[in-house]
Length: 420
Image (cartoon, rainbow, N blue to C red):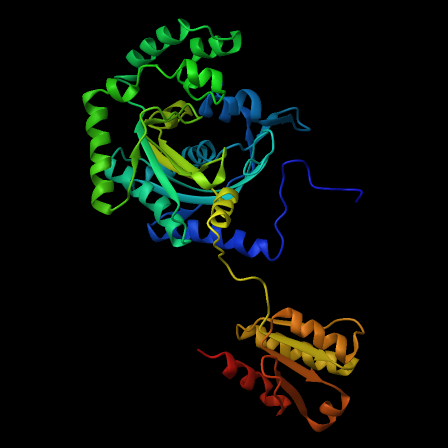
């Protein structure tokens, strides 16, 4: 057993799996960029109060799952458990909301939650997210959802479904909250769940325990109590999704695990993942900016799980991304040859050719075995006699054919073989 290993619930990605990981992340980000979302890079830790206020103190994320610690200045900081609060903080701090609206941003990176690790549930999870801030328009909701859908489909993923609902607005939510609270407090709930029902009854509907889900099966449904404005907003979102061609299923009992969601709320689900079936989700957060000290502007966004999307692709038997295999493998037979090939390798890499080289004293047979394992199409073989003759051996590793090429023509010869 090695002396050190990765912390529990923190995956390592290395070749060839890392190529697929990068491909998933790039495809999901690419869908956002094609829709006009600009990249934002955020700190991986923030003031703890940002998440307590933004995400909600009654949520499991804040009360049970955050990595929180005091820094050397005795300030309470937290490794980011989600992306939206940090983006909204940055928008407010840097005045991005004072320009053209909506502010459309995308990001990718690690997020941290202290959960019980299992397949698809990690303590360091990788996500791609988008946020569109400043406009309360159901057409924008539909665009955000369509971007996520397009990202998944660009990977060839097709065994997923979009579940969508509305969590109402400030007009209907208080009335529904009272109705739900009355229902929940009439149940035989444990003390902790009863406390949550008093603080934020919607959190109880998000409880994953089978016994709690069974008791709350008959709870009143928010979709049946929407205000006129919230219903019109939701109907318009669905109409836009229909027009765009994004299929969906209305799930009236969906409750996301973050307190800031209002109106449109959605989740992408893949049944090939078992219990951890959610591969992404998001929603509208109309009061979050004001809550964090900014203007009273609305927003909508999502977070898509890169780890789970990769697992979903594997569940469908699909693979994406090129491994880090090379195009050309250099085989030096002497120290002088190694120096000459290092120069040629640099020139080829500048031309966009992927080049690797045999290092150490492997001998010709060992170096050629390494060339075959590398996946390269071409090997450059060079020894002292070749240097004296002013040539290098260019070998096609598929056919075994080798030709001698003048050293000053090697780059052009190799580039021509990969042209087109």
